[in-house]
Amino acid sequence: MTEAAALTSPMIVAEDVRKRFGSNEVLKGVSLRMAKGEVIAVIGPSGSGKSTFLRCLNHLETIDSGRIDIEGDTLVANDAQGQARYVTDAEVRRICARMGMVFQHFNLFPHLTVLENILAAPLTVKGMKRNEILPKAEELLRKVGLLDKRDAYPSRLSGGQKQRVAIARALAMEPDIMLFDEPTSALDPELTGEVLRTIRQLADEHMTMLVVTHEMGFAREVATRVAFMDGGELIESRPAAAFFAQPEHPRTRAFLESML
Image 1 (cartoon, rainbow, N blue to C red):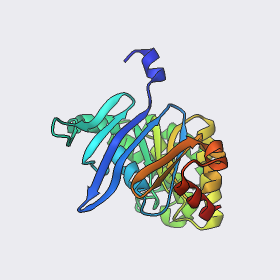
Image 2 (cartoon, rainbow, N blue to C red):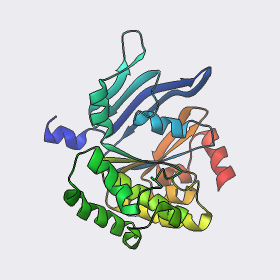
Image 3 (cartoon, rainbow, N blue to C red):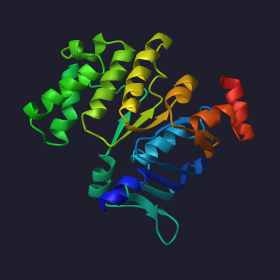
Image 4 (cartoon, rainbow, N blue to C red):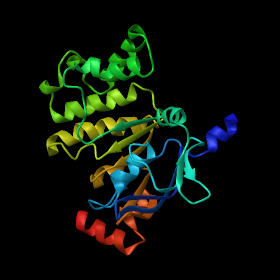
């Protein structure tokens, strides 16, 4: 890929993505394109397929049909029979390494300190030396306001602190894209703000982010675009200001009236 093409090509292209769990079709032909530096908030009622779509993008779930390209490289596409065929396992790992993922429930290693949680993946997955990654890990802890907790264990942290450590851990792998799966849904309301401030800071630094969230204020203020999903379909995707001011689809309007 030429430098010019790299600057203009989308970071994520999903086309007609379909996914079933048994007889339940949870994604019914979802398509989305995402540009570099965009922050897309994916909203919608529970069970609409938001988290499943996110997990399909980085191969935590496999799709039945459709196409997913990450930074111009194809992760999966349909074969001649219309069935999804993935690239080799090595290529899947290489492509998915460009994405960092932050989950609802932190998934920190309880037996490791905060600092060791951040060091773990660069040491084991990237094979980096400890002295290479240590300054970066400390800087990430400073960024999320938790350098003073570097030697603490997760059990000694609040939920908001755990989630900020999880964000720092994902950033330690230097991803080009960050995926957030309802990062505040497991938090008490008073702890939500500190996590959203961290994500807002990443947005200010032009990190490309796809955020599944129920936080309408965050979606309105921070997202460049909002995508609304319902019943396994992507119903509407528009710039955030226009989305909230003049939603086009009746299902979108009904959802926003129930949430705002």
